[in-house]
Amino acid sequence: MRSADGWDLAEFTDVGGTRVHAAVLGPEGAPDVVCVPGLGCSHRYFLPLARCLGTWARVAAVDLPGFGRTPGPPGALDVRGLSLALAGWLRATGRGGAALVANSAGCQVVVDLAAHSPDLLGPVLMVSPTMDRHARSTARQLARLALDGLRERPALIPLLTRDYLTCGVRRIAATFRHLLADPVERKLGHVTAPTAVARGDRDPIVSREWAREVAALLPVGRLVEVPGAAHAAHHSAPGRLAPVVRSLMGEHRHP
Image (tube, rainbow, N blue to C red; front, side, top):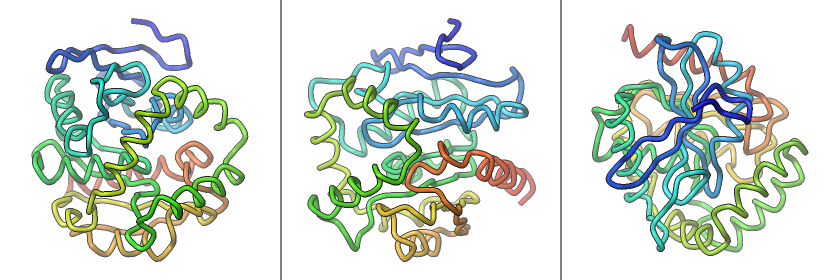
């Protein structure tokens, strides 16, 4: 189905009875890159990065159940539920082993995916991975989120507002509680593919110390700092992250 929001097409796949949506951009037959959004977010805010990657890659930004254009169950899925949904979609679409670009809470989903389905993992770019274990409280996370809203590109705000209204406050709040309880640091060792942790140097949600800790806990990890970017570095600085994805894919093919 032809897309009307800047992507090449809107793809719908039946995964366990759920019609999962993904926005696709880039030439057919090119290497696959899969984008996994953060809390409350959809495919929409990955468009700037997809345009940078789409000259040489086939980019698919998937909407996880309950977010974007993918319906969800009445109750919010926890991290394991979301990662199982992602696994089912990767298998159903034949994208297992694709490069994965995740933002924020999407990083927790990808790390959990590695814990139960490592065969589906390609190289990984974690953009601003949550949750900082040194600030694992609702009050501290909300304060950081509010500050981040003042530092992001103005163009991002209407995109996120639309996405948040689509999924609803209750689903966001329930999913947030699941994310807060997820011990992501204990599972990072399962991510054995080449991985880069990217952090904008103006990101108040993911501290430099936490980003360094995440990179150090990865078997094959490195830290990339993005000058001038906040939490959504893939949206504000896509030209800096696209070469990182390409480099990771080269490392994965030629270990």
